[in-house]
Length: 399
Image 1 (spheres, rainbow, N blue to C red):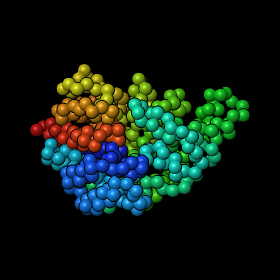
Image 2 (spheres, one colour; image 1 turned 30 degrees about the horizontal axis):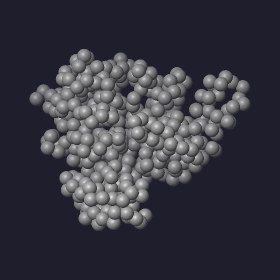
Image 3 (cartoon, helix red, strand yellow; image 1 turned 90 degrees about the horizontal axis):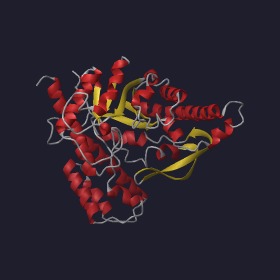
Image 4 (cartoon, rainbow, N blue to C red; image 1 turned 180 degrees about the vertical axis):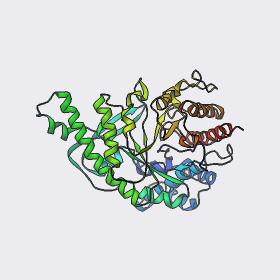
């Protein structure tokens, strides 16, 4: 029998200071080593004496030592997911795990750095004090390296749980890049400026989709169990043609591949996810949509519409007759203010009620990746996911 309300983390987890400082040419201090020791003991990570020996150099790490630091960071992230809910739930740990994107710079820069044709042009502010490096496409893109294969192999070796690999999609890479090459290519076409701009976006996107398909094909050959297609930019362009392109890109990316595919997006415009309906339901191989809802919700108890106002978008799935899986974001990832376990339980039960889905098809997760949170807060969030889902299981079973 499958498990009701299975749990997952969406992708990224925070990086400890001892992971980031060596790559920023910053000298480690006593607190960095103490953190590595304390968290290693807390999560039962083995071999930390080797990590502490490396970190004790404080600076001037060799390339091989930096690789070992990254490997330990991957291991700590795996253990964060595997120990989620400890002391709060009977069955600790998430059901779908990943190594927290610890080996990635971030979800855009890593793929762009490994696809030929891009040239970085500067930093762009995303939110708060967070910045990312934007690239310009200067020629036809082509595959250079599989930028996720080493992560997958490491994660498979160090967990017995089901593994999911998040992969940034073509729409997002296109939307977050300067489209120099394709814009110039379409500039003299005898169509309207709006159509020229869309045609340039579409050609760029579909070329990227073919490259990403090759990345995923190799992951499948290495035994990946699930691939999560990350499309945070799904609603960046809001014309009907662009919304249809989101689906077309997903289908192009997964064409001819056999695996479990899910799709994640977040933070739509004020209209909510209604803007993606019904076109996204034509993603032929998508077995689960994972969206964020917790950030729009209140902190009070209840499983009615008034109490759970942030989750009413979920009714769309029932209205359109959707009967596959859903990943429901039940925690706001851009604040340290956390709900109680009881409120998380209510959010889950409300989601089950309004979608009418089998609880085995309703996955529970934070709204998005947790890379912006401190490790202590991220761990509490994962604890809430595990504990809230367990509380909801008991209620769903009539206990």
